[in-house]
Length: 157
Image (cartoon, rainbow, N blue to C red; front, side):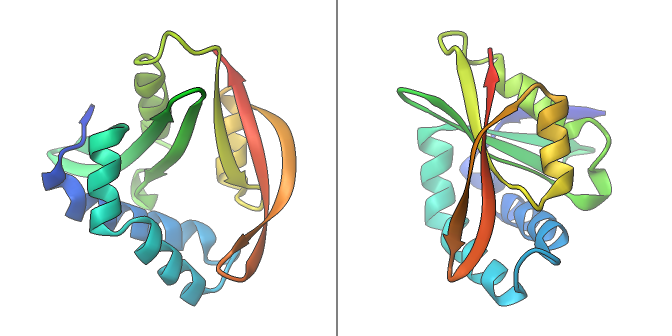
C-alpha cells in the first residue's frame, strides 16, 4: 500500500536515489548520460533539495517504509508542478497519479497547474494528457548544451 506524506530533510538520500534511477531510465535515449549526470548534480544537490523541501510542497510516496516516488509543487502567482518521479519498478501502479492528486488537493486557490515536460518523454506526456493536461506551447530548451523539445502543459483546476 502506498502512503504519501510531506518530505523531510531526512528523506534527501532516498529522494536522490529515486530521481537518479528514474531520470536515467527515462532519459537514456533522450540525452547523453554525461548530461544527465551533470543535470542531476546541479538540480538535485543536497542544498537544492533542502531548499525545495523547506520552501515548497514536496511530497514523497512510500511503499513498505521506502520512498518510491516524489512530487514537488512550486507555488506563488502560478502553481507549477516542478517534478514527479517514481522508481521504474513502481511505475504504472498509480503512484504518480496519487502524488499528483494529493498535491493538488493542497491548492484550492488556483485555477490551473502548469508543468514542463520533454516531449520525447512519451510515458510522461501520456500520463499528463490522461490526467487532463493540455499543451499550451512547445519550445526548444537547452539543457547543458543539449537541445530538448519541451512542452508547457496546463491543467484547469
